[in-house]
Image 1 (cartoon, helix red, strand yellow):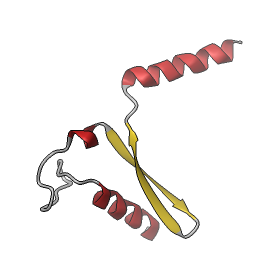
Image 2: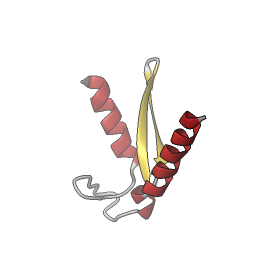
Image 3: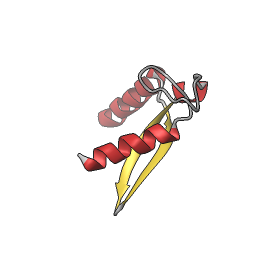
Image 4: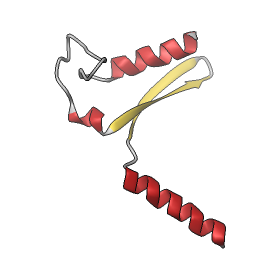
Amino acid sequence: MLVCAEAVARAALLRKESRGAHSRLDYPKYDDYWGEHNIVSEKRGDAMHVEPCPVIKAAGVMALVEEKKAKEKK
């Protein structure tokens, strides 16, 4: 549970905005950047790393699914 709590805390500090239940007094407004990015957390050894990654749009997901289907048919 401590690893999960650290990941959540680091991700919250990385987001420099307020949105829904995530609100910060030092960044009271929305930032459109975070509407297009998720934060990926990864434990590497003893360190926790967090980084923003672009959201895959539905069309992008469908393209990946279709590509996988095409490869499976071969």
